Length: 255
Length: 158
Image (cartoon, rainbow over all chains, first blue to last red; front, side):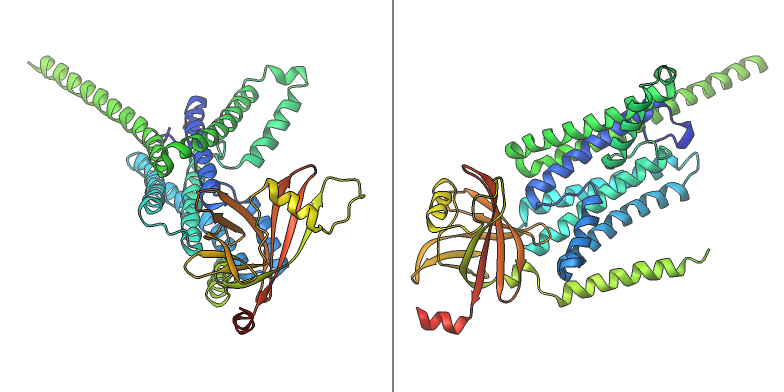
């Protein structure tokens, strides 16, 4: 999911990455609405709210929303910086894994703070929402960057637009058998369904385990990290074994 | 391409935002004090324009009967997050209040752990407007308006 970059990624890589990250984005969004009454995985609504607050002259609330949008932007910025400045064969996995680590750290911080320190003040709410928006920015920036913008886990406006276009194309016979289009539709549907089910699961989980829901989100992100780590370990092991076999074969030929 | 104008623009926006947050008062601060209920009005309602938008005492009573909406004359928000409903100077009920979201949601937690949410439409030094959704015989949004009771005047009254 994380170790391949841009056009080297195949359909299955994108489906796995899109599905799992959209699931976590859906979970984060719903839990933030339940706890903080604010969306955190999408910023389209925040832009509308910002304009509304400016028009009403609510400078405090406008400033808060602007800083939230900035943090989502900062998350995307940091993610892509890490990806493009470490695009070497040896450092690629690490560069792609660091934003996920940072995202996990933000989510664990929010969960931990909610559990042990939260006094429900407005200032705390604003800071915790900011942390979640930064985390979602990190995730969205990472998946969009490494998948060549094919996967965007929190951008459901664009996704619904693309789905509408693809399904309208399927009304023509010549496009119905187009493999690339079919795969794109499958990928988008996977992201949409994962985002939805993440939201439902999060809503159900929160009423049972409350703030531990953040731990569950962290565990799903661990799967994203460890899946590729295990693959890399296997590849490393196979390469090492082949190299040893070749060395043995060369040694045998000499003797 | 010169990047400094873009970075400066973002820097300036951030600086102004931080300035606004430190200078302006948040909803949580503005809401503190005593508020006298002034009016209840339908903000939006599913009807065919035959009903007046002002809510009379009977309708108010009907809405309150089915929802946990408070019919107190005065709402007193204390800094310790305690909200008291007063009628003729006597406390009718006290509960916990919180401001959520970007300062646009007023959450009231009752002692029996029931939670109510109101949308804060506007809060200034003199006026507080909140909305709540109801689904009685007709669906709609009710706008409640409050006027601030200056501290001295309120002390004299009670």
